[in-house]
Image (tube, rainbow, N blue to C red; front, side, top):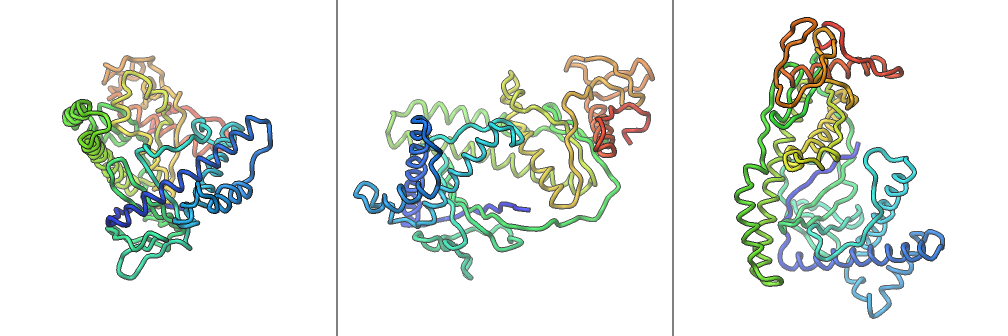
Length: 388
């Protein structure tokens, strides 16, 4: 499987200027090629091939006075920008044809020099990891890197990223095999929520840390300071950077916490089941800020790839299952309940349920049934003892 390993980079002044030039050249090639394909589409012509675009907007463009500065950066950067455009178009076409899972993908858009994230990508022939711990980047130099962990194999590519907070990162793509953990007999159903971030079928509740809410006061102060600065002034640029750094701190803290919780769950469980939530739809409700703050999608994605990496089973159960309405003890559907009801008693068997723990147990039962009947219809939970 392919994994990304991200490391903080600390380029010096000259390297930052060279990276800024590389970001700009890659952006120009992307925009020129995108413009050519859009113009051909509007004129009713055939799709312009990558070979034609490369010859016209990279090789030939370097010979013109208007684009002569493209020759000052590595050719790999320019060619990779065109390959990334091809990848974006393929994702869009696959989405239109229904061949791509997940939400619909929009067509590629133009890039701006004002975008908060700038990046370039380099192949193996344009970078090298030196013995002194620095990373050589073609036409940029040896960049200092903070190595937080060792990569399991030699990387096949590296992406240099500058984020909104002005930080630089090197993102390496590594091909690696599974690293199975010792088997356990534990299987876990997880109910994600806002009051408690996650509730497991064993009854464990993981509190919602609410990183954004806890930083909201400081973010509001920084946002007010930014709004008072004059457009285009140096002080406005400083205020924007300070706000971006605080947002980055919130995102980094949330991501680190997600990694810790997801790793612990995968280590303790042989199989993990979660509900297939429609996060995009929920994020358009009045709970949008709280849902974005929780970061359910990122957390579930971590569970999925870590399960594959460590030899665990991971699956999503049908989002339309009435997990909060069904008694996990006898299987009787007790009817819908408002969110204010956190505990209820089954009218059929008299079992007293915590709403979230009961839902997690139903998710576990549904996941186990679906796993055993992978080729048949989804079996609803509802047999005594099915929740384990």
